[in-house]
Image 1 (cartoon, rainbow, N blue to C red):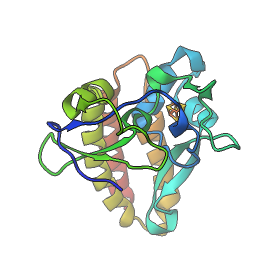
Image 2 (cartoon, helix red, strand yellow):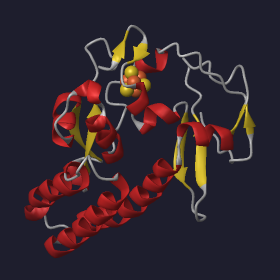
Image 3 (cartoon, helix red, strand yellow):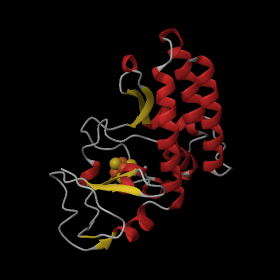
Image 4 (cartoon, protein in one colour):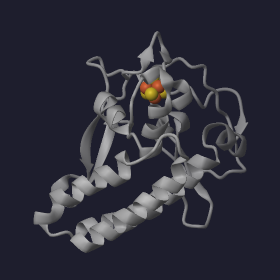
Length: 216
Ligand code: SF4
């Protein structure tokens, strides 16, 4: 169950880092380009670039399926027991660079229709004790778990995805493979981790829109 809340709301919220939400994650956690970028910069992971992050810690899928005009997406790997590959002794081994979905859990955040506003939905899952103690304003929560770079990325990603999914829908089937390779390269892989993320992302999305327009 979920319901919409606003930035000014005060919520009962508490996290005691029990790690239960990291134990049931098979095919649940999307690794966005900004997530992979931060993981590639995490010295603990010893990754040379983003391609290595995707190769070692994720598996690809299409959302929705390719035949329905799906978009290539990467999901975080889980162990056989359903727990996250980064869960070590009950804590997250990459806590400072954990994916956005992990940082915002137990809330789901989307850009709302009005400019610069967000839609925030609490997830009432059966394992969660998050809403039974403590209190935090959503504004404070956002500052802590979804800083400005993330909010700007989220807004840019949703805007770009609306346009890119429209182009994929128009793509002749014989061009889908080529389009998929371009998406994987420009959307997910082609970043210099010594440079800031967002300007590179915006440039790559513009290139990708042009490339897919020419293919469609
Ligand atoms: S990346 Fe970290 S926070 Fe996210 S599911 Fe894995 S262990 Fe948990």
